[in-house]
Amino acid sequence: MANFVISELQNANSYCEGTKIYANSLTAAKGRATKEQVFQNTYLKIESESGDLLSIKYNADAGGRWHDSE
Image (cartoon, one colour):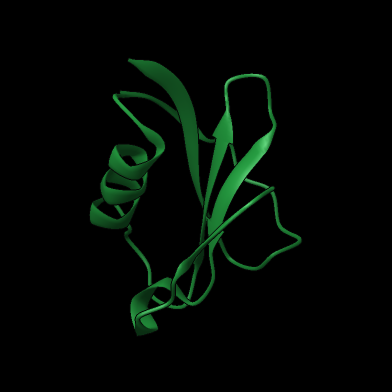
């Protein structure tokens, strides 16, 4: 189990307090973030507990894809 922080943002430059979750993998965290999306045309962001960006999904409701950071 790892700690992740998921956030739903209005645009790439906005800030929102994230929700801390526990998941077995980044893939599991992505699935949970997608299921918990509330609004349309938003960005979903997954960070590590220390604040490092792990993955972001643009235009989440229009079939957007996750983009992992290197």
